[in-house]
Image 1: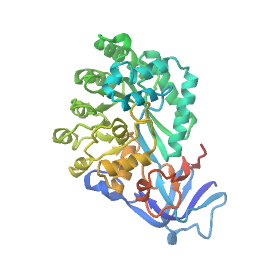
Image 2: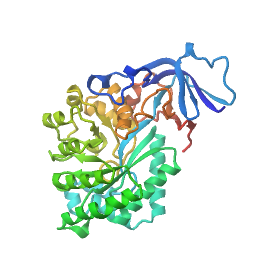
Image 3: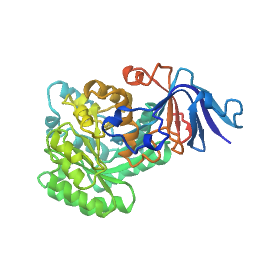
Length: 421
């Protein structure tokens, strides 16, 4: 038998062993509760979590099963791997010139109006072969793994033609097949209106509905359909049309909403049963009441807010009103070229006034829920997939967000195997 026994863990974090401790996601005051075990052990067998507890209950101390790898984690913490539920890591090239333009005073909208932004990435992607696109994206996937991420949602949206969107989705599928990451694919054809449809946005929406979605569904390349429902991008009515087509083809909606304005995106997300509504910098009581009691997870992306120097989502008020929130990186070339969940947690604590406990719940259990993965990931629970990481020596789990530039992810275990990137 091949197993992994981790012993002498300073803190085993996010332990959910009893029914009352094991929700599919945390809401409101529950988000500030983070169960953990001091001086703990965990045993991994056949790719899943097979046992854990305090060291004085360790049944393997004197009788270690043959073939078991034993890891001494003295002074270290063990976390469930992060579940990054919003990324755009499949893209070509980079956009550092736009970074310089922003420093010189241009806004995100002004850069986009000059042919930058998403349309710039679309041009670069069309000029890049599928193999090269895969190699560039694979490097980012490996980077996420090194940062402690074990599950990731990846969107298309830089193709904006039938064939280029399918090319992106094939690359996403290959990342799922050839890395230890658990991957959820999202079709985001409604990311921007391509240059050839300038002045004919309704025609591009028709293309998404009549050609793109049927092909994506037929080839089983995505689980979700996303729309950038935002001022200057796609309207509520266009979003409703796209979501109707998505549901008809068995694809569940998710949405980019309320990043730059009160767009109505939150309401349409809930109306169509979207699994998540992401960004949410511009929300208030009306949106929060709409989200309350729904199955739509609010996903906050503080890295993009930081990079674009915008107002942060009002996480503190959302949680205090009883809502859940998830955290994700939004790793992309234009508004957040970063995939480090540790930094996102720091931003959540400092800029959105979340506690470390809330940030960890948002980056693990709630992120898993936003990908339909809370049954198998997001917590230390018997029978769940063994996606965990061991930190460098540190005094407590609060230290992870506190020491935000320190490389604290030391040993990575995905699918029950020690992972080398």
